[in-house]
Length: 80
Length: 396
Image (cartoon, rainbow over all chains, first blue to last red):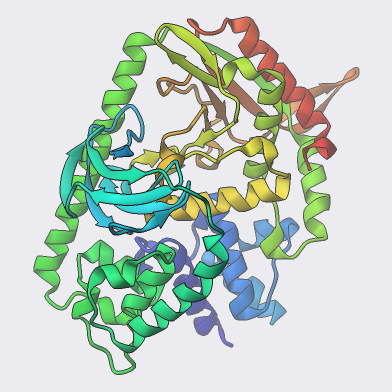
């Protein structure tokens, strides 16, 4: 899985949880939760879905490392 | 014989459209069974019967708008209760299978008895997300034909983009406006009639968060507990000790509710907010509270709430922490007598013995109805909540 594929998967799972979000709304560098108004429940649901798709589980202590789309892609890429 | 009336799902509801019957004349119904779907400003709601019986007559046709209190059906008491439940299960299965084989069948036959959600997905095969999108876009999924026979999200994209886009916008706008109106009415009434008092306290939440962190370390990601669920559990525990805040002001008198059904404020992504009840939370463990809360959020956002969840709230909990505000003072939703506000968990200087340390803290507030209780009761509640959160093991 390369970066682009990871990016697409993450965007897809964000949109599954929040169908009103367009791909263009998701910035690489902004905080996913605050910029897209995703609450803690939805954020956890996104991580659960990504764990199923990618097979990487993000421990709570690493939440700061997956705060933006860019960071999240890097985080998953390093752990595949 | 008794009448089944259009229920009132909150002080702000005047009428609703009966969308679909889930039963027909002669059907046996059980207490708590969903018998119809209605459309309100809060979305489509499943409404339940409150007694066992047999449907004698359906008084209102589908897609009729009815005022609250309008008789919808006649239900007669059952002579004897037979253990139908066990027999029903396989029956449902076969009905479902049959209806899949012959897709075109009279509606009542298919809708009969089986749980709504499963039946719906069997009428036309479509993924839940496709269904959701279709609903949003106002696309009739039965009009979509795909090679596989299963409708996926990609099949839903509106063909005639422009007109459908406009339609969707208007529809969303309408729901939003009617919800805005409903909230405006209820809150204006509240501010006019309820003499609110407000209290606030800062709680050191570090011990509770440390405890959650330890707990979550040993769990898989899908079983993690969020602070929001822990806080609800803590509020419920505190309400058990200070029950005066959990109840109603009706007919100039204060009534304390037996069950604790906190209405939890859930924002909708399209705007507006709903405060459905987490039912009978006093009986739930921390894990169950998390699970039920997650399920409630999901159903609130997908428009699949039950009538009882919109009519039995005994207190409201609003948690604006995710939005980053430190404190929130709520407006009481009548006939309730209190609303708990929880702010953002943030780091703050905190006195520990003789020194100052940094701790994670949270501001908890309460707005109480002065006709029902005094500030002393509210203060007792906040103090109890604080103590409970210092000893998080007891929240399991």
